[in-house]
Image (spheres, rainbow, N blue to C red):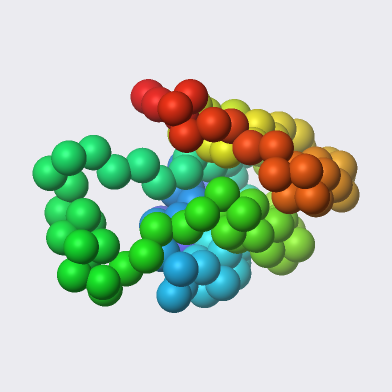
Length: 139
């Protein structure tokens, strides 16, 4: 993915990437955050969007959850994953949005300059447990 992204950038193509928070489940929370940060650091897309994993009936991943092979993240863990990502990414100037209806917390800014402010927003939401209600999350 990194090589493909770099080739597109070299060809002058503007990149917009989307990552899905929580897709690694509880076991891979840290790995997913750090590898995502590494990916974005190496590609440096012009735009980056973050969604939060939501599964509909019939999704193949539901079988993994029912079998105990994967655990979905709680809102606090989703924010922890986002914080880890922001603490490790280096992609100066990338327009960052995590304001989709699936997200527990709306974040927006430009990497790297707005990272401290976004981390502060995460901290405030985590301290107050002020997340988007589950019933409001939707597509």
